[in-house]
Length: 211
Image 1 (cartoon, rainbow, N blue to C red):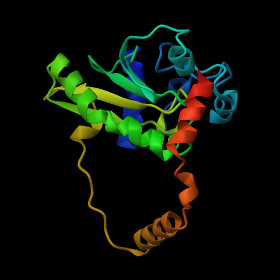
Image 2: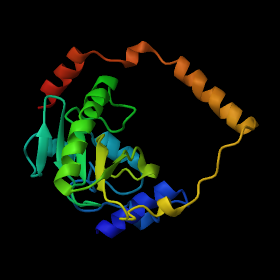
Image 3: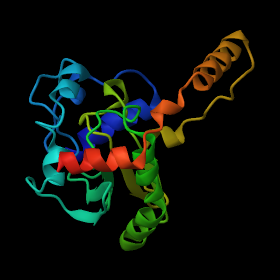
């Protein structure tokens, strides 16, 4: 099962084409089950199901088992039940949000602030010298559980976990397409409203209501 999941993730990292339909279907385990019991026809159904069928929400509420490594008021860290390497862990916010862009920035900041200490402890415990930090955001990116989470994947020299590591990357070139892309992104970023930065009090209230 771990090999199948690795193939899905690797297909997105190498950008060689879409993963086969079977690889995008529901898989057993904490980090490979969908939040809803719906079919594999797309992410809409899983997002609409919200917290009700979300395996991560059940773990947070104490209704489903998990190997918990860390917990605070904003997030938890657990071992992935279908790991790609020993110590493969997930940082999961207690606030249910189906995607990274729908997660309040202060929640993302709180999750990211735990990465240095958690990754250091995980690498030390697994005698690893490196780690991958990974977010699968959206169905096409390999997301199969629609509750935001970060992967910490311990690495050891020469483990050859990702096939993409043997590929040669081509340098980007200045051309009209790239210029248009840069300008489009800059315009979108500058148009963002400060309203997206929700207050810590609002987030705390949402988490309390979620429990």
